[in-house]
Image (tube, rainbow, N blue to C red; front, side, top):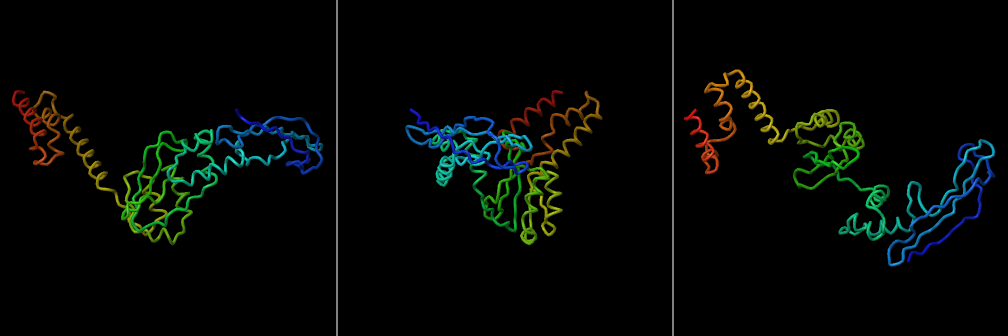
Length: 274
C-alpha cells in the first residue's frame, strides 16, 4: 500500500509578488500531491494543502511557496536528490532510474538537465563536425556531434545543427581557444561553412572526401542525364547513356569482379541485341 502524509503549513502571509503588500486575505485551498519517496515496496506521497492568497491592494491571487519541491518540478526534493544520486552510476539508464523511482523518463531527463552541468572538453586542434538524425527531438531533427579527429573521442553533442544554435554554442568558448583550432572537417552543410568562417578565423575548413566524391558523382550524373535527354530515345547513344551509366562511376577492376562482371555481360548482351 502507499503511505500518504497530509500536510497543512501554518499561515505565513507571504507578501504580494506584484506590489509587495503584506497580510493578504486567504482566498482558498487546493491540494498538491507529490511523490516523497518512491523507492521500496511502500512508496510515500505528500498531500500538501496549499493556500491561495488574494492581495488587498492589487487584488491578484497567488499561492504560498512550497518547501517540498523546487519551482518547475512536481516531484519532492528527496526524490530529486535520490534520482541524482542514482545517476552517478555510469551503468544506470534514464529508463531504469525512472522505474526505480516510479516516475517518467521525461522527469528523470528534466532533473538531469536542470541540475547536472557537464564540463566540456577543450577544443582540440583538429575537429570533426557532423550531424546525426534525431527525429524525436523537439529542437531539431538533427543533433550536431563534435569529435576529436586524433583521439576519436567526442568533444560535445549539441541539440541542434542550426546556424543560430551553433553560433550561440561557439561564441561562449573563449576566442583564444577557438583561435588554436587548426582544421575543422565537415560535410557540405552551408551553416557549418558560415559558422567556421565567422568564429574560427585561423582554422582551415576541410570537406571530407566522401562528400566530395558524392557531389562529384552527382554532378557527373546530372550532366549524363542532360546529354541523354538531348538524344533520340530510339538511338544507340540514348541506350548507352541510360543503361551503361555505371561505367562512369567504377574502375575497371571493380567491373571485372564476379558480381559486376555478370551485370556487365548481361547489359552488353542486351545492347548487342538492341
